[in-house]
Length: 276
Ligand SMILES: [Zn+2]
Image (spheres, rainbow, N blue to C red):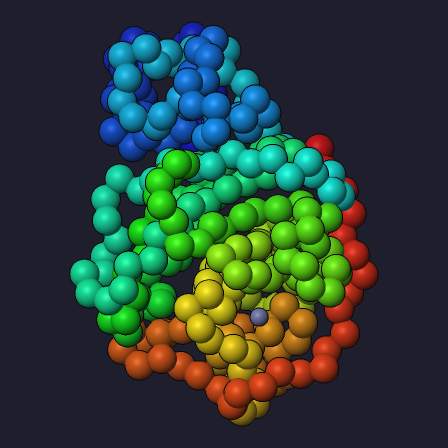
């Protein structure tokens, strides 16, 4: 959320901004306020440094609030994390096995506050076309210090290799045990020739890796021109299918393809990035 307030805007507007901010918890930086949660708020995470995300009488909205921080990250971060708060309301699913997840963003990643990343991931996981649609799972985001079944990391390319413990490609995302590791390079850039917008690719990468955690393996394109199953490795090739982010595109029946994977090559390693 932009907070580019100026002194030309009157007190009433500012008051309404404050009310909206408190109601939505949209990550306004608490200028001059020290973070109270050392785990959830790193020193370099911008809006994620809001102390708890809960309404508080000490939040200030200052006209001099700095602009949005450009996205940047090193090739390999320090493997230290900002953990987003839990979601305020339970997910939409009411039946199925509860899977609690936390969202952690590597602290060296600038301009992508943990809270914003968590909001996007949770919107994907709570979508009526997502994994909860089949009734077998409930997914709930929890905060730091709470019991979890998995952690979803947004990691630099090099830290991705450390967490994944697979072929260290620094390009793909992965799932390793209770770790779902999203490569920030893919989150920021998507993949060439995907044929859908970046938001769709992000939804795909979340659903694909979480799908592994829920027990699903790779699938192949079921036919030219058809949507790719979410468990197809769409990052590496669509093989005649079209981009698709959802396991339950119509909300009722899981959309799948033949079990198996392709022998696609992996593009070269990702390095540091700066949008500035
Ligand atoms: Zn996979």
